[in-house]
Image (cartoon, rainbow, N blue to C red):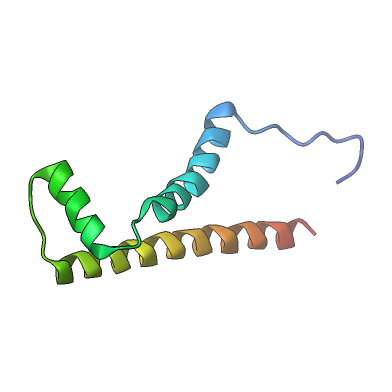
Length: 86
C-alpha cells in the first residue's frame, strides 16, 4: 500500500466482534474441565439435571472439538487474509 494512502480504521464495534470471535472459543477451551465427572457436576449445579458419566464424556469431547475447530477456522481465515495482502 502506498505511504500516502491511509488504511481505514475498523469501527470499534467491528474490533470488539473480531476480538470476541477469538475470545469465546479460547475461554471455552480453557474452562472445559479435564474430568468428565466434574463436567457432570457442573451441569447438575447449573441446571439441576444430572447426566451420566458416558454422556459427560461425549459432551466434553464435543466441546473440545467445537472449540478447537473454531480456533482452527479463525486461524485459517487470518492466514488467508495475510496471504491476500501480499
